[in-house]
Length: 196
Length: 213
Image (cartoon, rainbow over all chains, first blue to last red):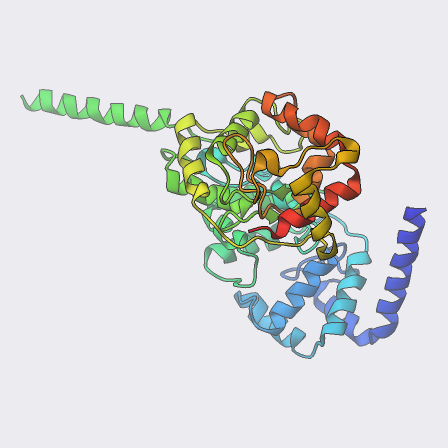
């Protein structure tokens, strides 16, 4: 019963999202993020992402708080014309699309990446990613889903933090990411790209 | 003479390398530095919040700020000995593993922090929660929380500070007390109490504590 109600809620939300969105808004996103929103080149997958996370990112592009070079180059302008309602509706819409894992990382690094993801490295005071991002890298509330994002996006994002960008992220991420060694970033990005 | 000094220099160097290697390399191949308290504190804060106020990620990581040292150290030992949270998807024994001196140093550090509580519980239940906390629940023979945890929930020795604890954390612990805490003697005191509390009583107590300074 609960499940049915949830499903109805989802359908209603989806319908309201689509109806209130000009088709152009979605097309403006899929232009770069892929026609089924699975991500393309530098643009990350949006399909299946946590809606609150997408919404927060759109707002942080809007106020220029997410400040890495690719965001400044593409997303600041893309988000400039958004109002809060459209940002919300886009977030809900893309969160409903079924995601596909990118699987573009180095397979040989999966085991090492999984170890860091699940347990961190207590000996070197690196926290476990899973504590916040979940056992299956599925994300929760405002915390993004990481499983299946592309290797190149994950790597770039983790490197950006280490270089001092992304003031908009919640407090622990810039600190934790800047503790990562390059080979740990490679391993994490590889592992996560294969998570279904 | 020169040969001898060269020899001893080489010996020193090889000793240094051997010692460095003994400092253990983790899975990433990175050599672990000697664990320093300041680095370990940052590590704790990465999950438990920048001022130890707690953080709700996928897991609910409790507030550590102001916690009693004895309770703090007991919990770290319980994780290490697999008596607390043994069924979790994260290896809590490894994540919380450290030697007793480090436990004591961290306990002292977090004891001294006093950030504002997060709040977050339903406000309309605060009064009910306060009443149960201070007077117990006679109809189910539940003693007053304040009897052991202090009139302000500030904790005492092995009895945890509860003031300012994250709302969902308190709810989660009380609802699943026995499976999460195991049969540790201190935890055993709480088991019948947690069982006797109804869900609405648990929510009310947690709401009250989430705002308590």
